[in-house]
Image 1 (cartoon, rainbow, N blue to C red):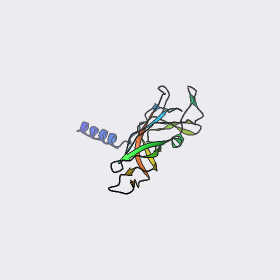
Image 2 (image 1 turned 60 degrees about the vertical axis):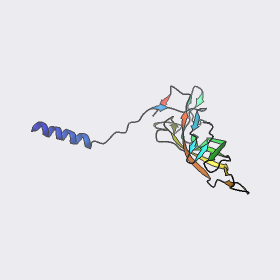
Image 3 (image 1 turned 180 degrees about the vertical axis):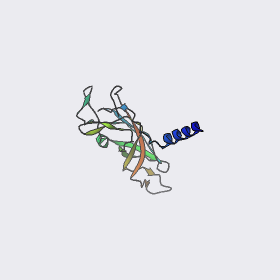
Length: 167
């Protein structure tokens, strides 16, 4: 009976212990690294092009500035064509990073008082329409433009840094 009580007590302690969050190290992004956008932006298919990150952190690695929190907001890829299932005449727009994933910024490490950007998983992207795609008219008349001002999608970073990691 004593063994059973000890076992119950141990299990109760184990299950009631607070979970510790594990922080995984990942590669720090540096100036010149790429943001690669996935082509599916909801109903829109975007003919994507990569964007190039500019680093503004005071620290450098191999002579290139580290990317810090906020550098992702400066990235913009204009002139990308797109279509939808209803709008087969291509339009154009600009790809931007809307939000980073939770694993794409350092938690513990900072440079110049700002978190550094990490390769991480996938960021959320927006495609802002400059010239709407158009639907061919059913008969004589003008094409019908896409009424959506933007679409949401995803993307990921590609880095040339294979040594410097942060968490």
